[in-house]
Length: 414
Image (cartoon, rainbow, N blue to C red; front, side, top):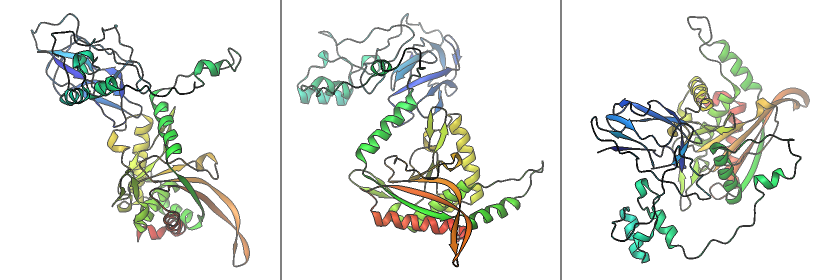
């Protein structure tokens, strides 16, 4: 019997996925475990392996097309097995949260089961239907091969329509405000939609407060120059490392969280999770958006290790090759816009994290030393805190510990 090739969930926030590349074409012989296709989500691209040996047939989602998680995108037949003329496919329901999928050929939608048919449904869907007094045969299934899911039952059981939202300024309405031909149109892709949704939710639901501190970088700059000058050379005579100021910032944040464990937390609605290790996410700008790969257990790692990991993760982020384990689960985050000359800004928290540090540019200023003005390089950092999990005094303690480490970087190694 033919084996379904299912589009898997590779990210907890994923509702649909786009197939960016098929490694085999219809009719090819494939081996179980071999790379079959690449799936592109709003955050990464991942290879998906073949679930069985056999002949690949009935590819219903072509390169560049999207499908809901859990839907069949092709079938694998045993050698010699008769091929169904038209593989069963579904037309996913279009909702506000799930974009429409455009299949290669318009497959028929599954209709509610007719009298006498045994409707396909998950066990939970059957239980919910019994509790709600609903007939499964009257419910259209959106799962693979028209299987009725719990979500389908809940949707069918809703008797009160949601209140109508005020009309939003859609694309067409906005375009009418400007002269035709005076702008270019760039459709919003999955990454941008996710960024918009998550950060809108964060600003609307997370009670942010902000704390700023100014650090003097004299000792850090001197230490960085000495370490880079002492880096061993490889066979080509190139230094084996080149530390950046950002590497020191990452290390300082990780150590500071260990000194103030009450700030190394995430908000879990009915609980606050206080974490043992400092897992620091670092925002990386990419075309059309950003990723925040995470460096794990920063407090245990050397500056050179942090530097090497950050370079590798940033490269993978720009190539959209990060896997979920490389960008999920951070306990805080750093957003550094200093390289763009931004002196000070505030960043939006990425839930469930409870803090994010916005790092500004190093600026030369005159500061008083023994009553005399001395030119020094200074940096302003602003900590955004979720007041549900981090109180003002705790945030202040964290920034105080961070500044102490930045101004005396040898303390990071103690």
